[in-house]
Length: 298
Image (cartoon, rainbow, N blue to C red):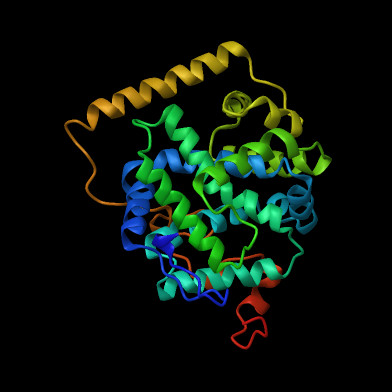
């Protein structure tokens, strides 16, 4: 792919950098045009990863999503936001990639699972914004999302990743429909995550909000999380509300548009307050090794 570089004739991968135009498009999508939609889409992508027992089983084994769901969620959201805000080829971006590689090297993770998680960062925003955004993503914006996360995948040494947007969408859809499987760990990790997401809301709202979340998930996801379907009437109401929101935003954007990008990593978080450092990111039990400057993994 010309926007992310080329490989030498010997087959060895040369140093590649992301096209600055691609990076700017992604920054606009995440920080300016669709910040709320991107967050919702990535939350759905997260829930869907729990439908693969190889992923949910590992997360259940580590206990991170059940014992520290807010920290695990904030860590993921902060990493994603900072990769986009800084760019993966800056010193800060490379430090984040190095941190991710250190964390993941602790566990045995299948290449197929890496590829599916990576695909969710592209496929879910495209689908969500197509359905509920104030406008659909343009082809160049969809391609920019793919090129950004493909470049991140290359920096993480993910060899078995889709090499085009079409392949990525096909892999994501095939996994959703054919490879999801029931496991007790699926529901355990998903329930803990949803409880964390609902924690800021008053308890009387929790049953209705849980049901609202189920309105946005496909039958195969609900089945493999062992979650019941939401009532048809509620699903209809939720979708009407989201369509009304998109219409209002589309109308408003004709007269006013935000001028300044804002990223999740620039706001206070429950886990870290006003600011965070990269040294805080990761499972607490791994922090001493992760922060060791003489780590042999480097």
